[in-house]
Image (cartoon, rainbow, N blue to C red; front, top):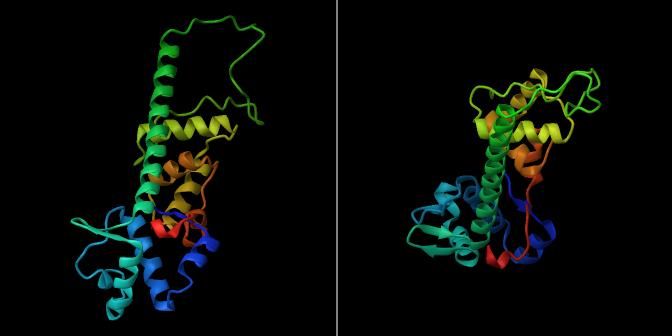
Length: 214
């Protein structure tokens, strides 16, 4: 995960007694946990987060907010959010595949209609070009399911898909050290129309409540 929820008030109320160094250790441990999506290693955790000279502070934070298991230090609340995040991505992917199957079935079973019919399912943009006349082949490095989800979401928001728009998303993705595929996944999962690097940056983190469960 490249972002997680961070609630300033809850964090302050549950960590007010921590020293500045312990506070720094806690934030770094959380960042590492969400980024790697796996337990903090048992061996030299202080060194892993760049605080090898403050191992006592790191150990106190781990004992207070994490649970030691055979696999390493785990955080219950973080695990729940990571599962929710992947469940949302999985649901979006399945919905995209289902939508693609329906479109494919409709295409094969479509009956040609006369040109003078009074209604049409084609929605026109401001320049009178059909927005459903979109290339179904995803850009290099983007999976078909992610592309289908992205196309469906853009059409629902009446936003056209142009080379300029995709290039802009790719540029912002690189700023956030993400691939275009990852950026499009985030757009689908968050219900965005576009993508900005700062939207997934550290300043946008919002940690949810009950820090004793962390």
